[in-house]
Length: 143
Image 1 (cartoon, helix red, strand yellow):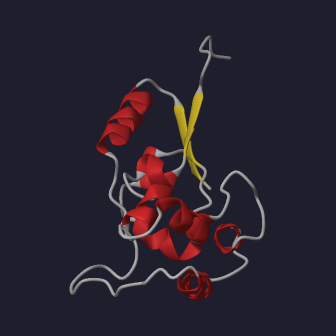
Image 2 (cartoon, helix red, strand yellow):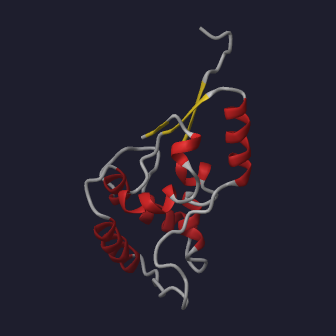
Protein backbone atom coordinates (compact mmCIF):
# COMPACT_ATOMS: atom_id res chain seq x y z
CA UNK A 1 0.00 0.00 0.00
CA UNK A 2 1.35 3.38 -0.99
CA UNK A 3 1.68 6.33 1.38
CA UNK A 4 0.38 8.58 -1.39
CA UNK A 5 -2.94 10.31 -1.05
CA UNK A 6 -3.48 9.80 -4.77
CA UNK A 7 -2.33 6.74 -6.69
CA UNK A 8 -4.53 6.94 -9.81
CA UNK A 9 -5.59 9.81 -12.07
CA UNK A 10 -8.44 9.44 -14.55
CA UNK A 11 -8.83 11.71 -17.57
CA UNK A 12 -11.61 12.40 -20.08
CA UNK A 13 -10.93 13.01 -23.77
CA UNK A 14 -13.02 15.92 -25.09
CA UNK A 15 -11.94 19.24 -23.58
CA UNK A 16 -9.38 17.55 -21.32
CA UNK A 17 -6.79 15.45 -23.16
CA UNK A 18 -8.05 17.05 -26.37
CA UNK A 19 -7.77 20.82 -26.57
CA UNK A 20 -11.11 20.84 -28.37
CA UNK A 21 -14.36 19.07 -27.66
CA UNK A 22 -15.81 21.61 -25.25
CA UNK A 23 -19.43 22.63 -25.51
CA UNK A 24 -18.37 26.16 -26.44
CA UNK A 25 -16.89 24.68 -29.64
CA UNK A 26 -20.44 24.15 -30.92
CA UNK A 27 -21.47 27.76 -30.32
CA UNK A 28 -18.30 29.10 -31.93
CA UNK A 29 -19.44 27.59 -35.24
CA UNK A 30 -22.45 29.94 -35.24
CA UNK A 31 -21.13 33.42 -34.38
CA UNK A 32 -24.34 35.03 -35.67
CA UNK A 33 -26.54 33.10 -33.19
CA UNK A 34 -27.13 33.23 -29.44
CA UNK A 35 -24.47 30.88 -27.98
CA UNK A 36 -26.84 29.65 -25.26
CA UNK A 37 -29.44 28.64 -27.84
CA UNK A 38 -26.85 26.86 -29.98
CA UNK A 39 -25.38 25.04 -26.98
CA UNK A 40 -28.87 23.98 -25.84
CA UNK A 41 -29.60 22.62 -29.33
CA UNK A 42 -26.37 20.62 -29.51
CA UNK A 43 -25.93 19.35 -25.94
CA UNK A 44 -29.10 20.23 -24.04
CA UNK A 45 -28.80 20.65 -20.28
CA UNK A 46 -25.46 18.98 -19.78
CA UNK A 47 -26.01 18.68 -16.04
CA UNK A 48 -28.91 16.28 -16.61
CA UNK A 49 -28.78 12.81 -18.11
CA UNK A 50 -31.97 13.04 -20.12
CA UNK A 51 -33.16 12.06 -23.57
CA UNK A 52 -31.59 14.98 -25.44
CA UNK A 53 -30.02 13.66 -28.67
CA UNK A 54 -26.51 14.47 -27.39
CA UNK A 55 -26.99 12.29 -24.32
CA UNK A 56 -28.50 9.53 -26.44
CA UNK A 57 -25.52 9.77 -28.82
CA UNK A 58 -23.01 9.55 -25.97
CA UNK A 59 -24.83 6.50 -24.59
CA UNK A 60 -24.73 4.85 -28.03
CA UNK A 61 -28.53 4.87 -28.44
CA UNK A 62 -28.42 6.79 -31.73
CA UNK A 63 -25.80 7.22 -34.44
CA UNK A 64 -23.87 10.37 -35.21
CA UNK A 65 -25.85 10.73 -38.45
CA UNK A 66 -29.17 10.55 -36.56
CA UNK A 67 -27.88 13.15 -34.10
CA UNK A 68 -26.87 15.43 -36.97
CA UNK A 69 -30.31 15.08 -38.56
CA UNK A 70 -31.98 16.05 -35.29
CA UNK A 71 -29.58 18.98 -34.84
CA UNK A 72 -30.27 20.28 -38.34
CA UNK A 73 -34.01 20.18 -37.65
CA UNK A 74 -33.58 21.97 -34.30
CA UNK A 75 -31.34 24.64 -35.85
CA UNK A 76 -33.89 25.21 -38.61
CA UNK A 77 -36.74 25.44 -36.07
CA UNK A 78 -34.72 28.05 -34.15
CA UNK A 79 -34.08 30.03 -37.33
CA UNK A 80 -30.34 29.37 -37.25
CA UNK A 81 -28.73 28.83 -40.63
CA UNK A 82 -26.38 25.89 -40.93
CA UNK A 83 -23.81 27.04 -43.45
CA UNK A 84 -21.74 24.48 -45.33
CA UNK A 85 -18.14 24.15 -44.14
CA UNK A 86 -15.54 26.10 -46.12
CA UNK A 87 -13.77 24.18 -48.89
CA UNK A 88 -11.11 21.89 -47.45
CA UNK A 89 -12.50 22.08 -43.90
CA UNK A 90 -12.95 18.75 -42.11
CA UNK A 91 -16.50 17.42 -42.25
CA UNK A 92 -16.28 16.19 -38.67
CA UNK A 93 -14.32 17.05 -35.56
CA UNK A 94 -10.56 16.69 -35.66
CA UNK A 95 -9.09 16.26 -32.20
CA UNK A 96 -5.95 18.15 -31.23
CA UNK A 97 -4.16 17.17 -28.08
CA UNK A 98 -3.80 19.57 -25.19
CA UNK A 99 -0.07 20.03 -24.74
CA UNK A 100 -0.39 21.14 -21.08
CA UNK A 101 -2.33 17.93 -20.37
CA UNK A 102 0.26 15.85 -22.25
CA UNK A 103 2.93 17.40 -20.03
CA UNK A 104 0.84 16.52 -16.96
CA UNK A 105 0.38 12.93 -18.16
CA UNK A 106 4.15 12.60 -18.65
CA UNK A 107 4.80 14.07 -15.19
CA UNK A 108 2.30 11.75 -13.50
CA UNK A 109 3.63 8.67 -15.30
CA UNK A 110 7.18 9.58 -14.29
CA UNK A 111 5.95 9.81 -10.69
CA UNK A 112 4.61 6.26 -10.94
CA UNK A 113 0.90 6.98 -10.76
CA UNK A 114 -1.61 4.78 -12.56
CA UNK A 115 -3.40 6.64 -15.34
CA UNK A 116 -6.72 5.95 -16.96
CA UNK A 117 -9.10 7.39 -19.52
CA UNK A 118 -12.84 7.21 -18.92
CA UNK A 119 -14.82 8.80 -21.72
CA UNK A 120 -18.30 8.74 -23.15
CA UNK A 121 -17.02 10.15 -26.41
CA UNK A 122 -19.06 9.46 -29.54
CA UNK A 123 -18.39 6.02 -31.03
CA UNK A 124 -17.85 7.41 -34.53
CA UNK A 125 -15.09 9.69 -33.20
CA UNK A 126 -13.10 6.87 -31.57
CA UNK A 127 -10.50 6.44 -34.32
CA UNK A 128 -9.97 10.21 -34.46
CA UNK A 129 -9.25 10.70 -30.76
CA UNK A 130 -7.33 7.43 -30.51
CA UNK A 131 -4.89 8.68 -33.18
CA UNK A 132 -4.23 11.87 -31.17
CA UNK A 133 -1.72 10.23 -28.78
CA UNK A 134 -0.44 6.76 -27.82
CA UNK A 135 -3.25 5.91 -25.39
CA UNK A 136 -2.28 2.26 -24.96
CA UNK A 137 1.28 3.21 -24.03
CA UNK A 138 0.50 6.13 -21.74
CA UNK A 139 -2.59 4.87 -19.90
CA UNK A 140 -3.13 1.74 -17.86
CA UNK A 141 -6.82 1.56 -18.77
CA UNK A 142 -8.95 3.19 -21.47
CA UNK A 143 -12.71 2.86 -21.15
